Length: 412
Image (cartoon, rainbow, N blue to C red; front, side, top):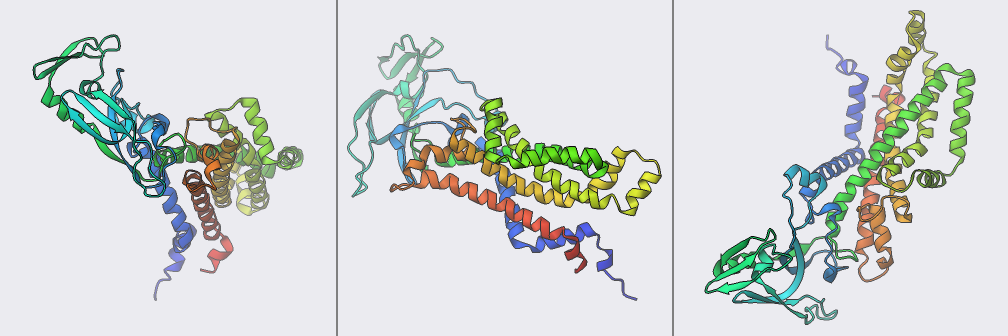
């Protein structure tokens, strides 16, 4: 007699099989996974690895995606610590060099003559004539003394005082070779914003903001919502009436208005946004959990647990809540998308993440005035990023809803 394979498959395995057949949900999961990977790598993969990707080169502001320019790195006369790779990946590191875009250059002796980039001709695309500037090669390569660098030439050697007030001697040929290495071609793959910052770098760091706000806001909303919904649904009576009074009161306040009130009360900042967004989304979770528990607590296994003398806390946590995880997962995915939208809206209005932190909403706010210009990309790119991230979470939420639907699973 042949064994029925379908009967050996658990409900969880059936749900997973259904989810794998849902191509939009799989696309959403892949996109979210990619976003998580990018957020984890952070400054380790950004072209601009300075904190908040805030290295400004004003001469190249509002450039289109793919813009390429020759850059001269001039060493700043400051002492910079050399952070570890892990520290650099998570927090970034100040750029020890000042970036100067140039059209062309020439090296004569211990001096570099450069033509500073000033833009292109709008018709021909050719670089406009730039201003001329001279740089001493030692000033390009080394951090010099702020008081008096004492730059002198001694035959084929160059003498100078470094930032630590120590005298150094470098051969001219070696200095010229080192200066040549400080000139490179830089491509802005997604263009630049109005401050001349790399848009790709700010979008990558902005992923962290969106995911962190979504994750912590959903955690807060689930913690409060599951607790309130569980005690309301299980105990009923006056407890249920009190919880539902709180839920309906919060429900009646417009979400953004409530968020504004919380932000004003707590102050503007990074952590305040997590609390503000999380404290506005728990009511949906509470209503769903309450409804699920009202139906589940009448099932015989709950009555059996009560007759065995188990505590109410154990019955709720060990026997009831595992049976409501499906709807909770669906609402969590939806709330994640909502949290990203709320954070972006708050940042756009100036109540959210404050500059120079690269929130996607802040990026839209800073560049929305160019949306109808000949270069709308600084505003369109973060808007597209928000749209794709919200779409991904909604697709996953819809996929989980279909995969965890009991009636649909019975038909498999």
